[in-house]
Image (cartoon, rainbow, N blue to C red; front, side, top):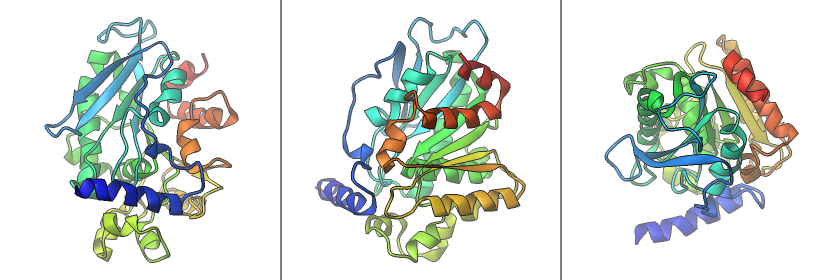
Length: 305
């Protein structure tokens, strides 16, 4: 009963927080991506029902077989949904990404995590770290390279990915066996949580982040940054009422000041479009791919196909 009351309220709050067309997570789409890919559904990384991930491989390849040019790089995708809803199989999360990158020799992994209120933000970040650890350990089974993971997330998922990338100690505590190449954060407005909570904001932030400033800092990617971390790309919407590009630019400057690499990619797309349209043959997709290619020579070679 509580969840039935919570979901419409969260959706209304997200409606108020973002422009029309920005709500990709409120339209469940479980149709498989229209691409030559096979989906290994619901691979477990924990015991909870939400601790599952889907793995997308080229349809013509057996799961354990590497491609002719070696083990595949991995796009490791984390969905959004105001930390309270969403799913790894939604069309806006995976459809275009799988259709674009699997034929180019990538493995795409889409991750679920426990949702609020059953799990708070630190537990959700722990879930993402646990999923990453499990995926790296099993990568060889899928013909994937555990040392060539690119983290990616949208909205709340972008916040969780940014938190993990900003603080690799969280990944080490979860037993992540290898570093990853970098992270692509798709339009998170919650990079600096204390700044969000001390300014006018949608009410769902209060449910998720509460009223404790210490908790805000603990869950804030901006405040979690610790020295030089893997490279960041922050994609931000110039059409959002809550102006996600300012926080992205501030976090990029902080990462650079600490010796890291960070880029900001503003886009004249709605919040949901930034997720759903990534992978289409567009200047936006190619700009993200330029960042991905800069991380690793093998990634660059596959993206050039």
